[in-house]
Image 1 (cartoon, rainbow, N blue to C red):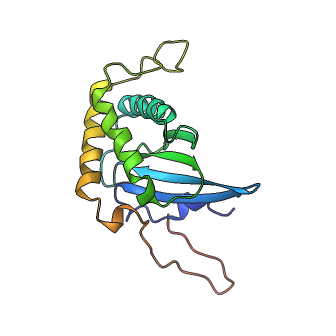
Image 2 (tube, helix red, strand yellow):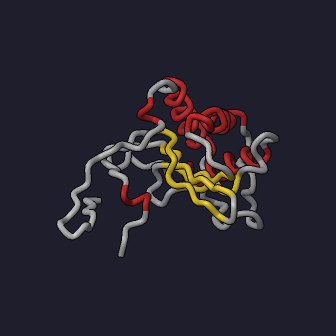
Length: 174
């Protein structure tokens, strides 16, 4: 079975940042999936699950209420490895073009006093939230983005050479 695109990126080289994971063309329009990576995979501890859950609620709410972006947002959700999020937007923009959107979303967490949608009627695990830790992670990531705004490494997946066998099969080590 062929590896999906996101598993074909060398995770030992990824740094925190904003990356284009894939662009799909659907019936005349484009949809782009972005990798919003908060932690270095397999090098840093993953984001605390309760904080990740709170960040999911807070930032999804922020994005879907942003007057300039709400009609472009298709999805915001956590990666299973808890090192980042996927953001899916209509259209095809570069990571640099959505930098301010992502930065503003993470900075907005600081002003939140209550995680939205945490009643049992709104959330499948309403007890699993940690607003204070969510604020800490959001602040850490926003500061990192600001400090590295001119660093192209936070916008481009690392490139590695992959072995291709004699019969044309690509070898992946991840």
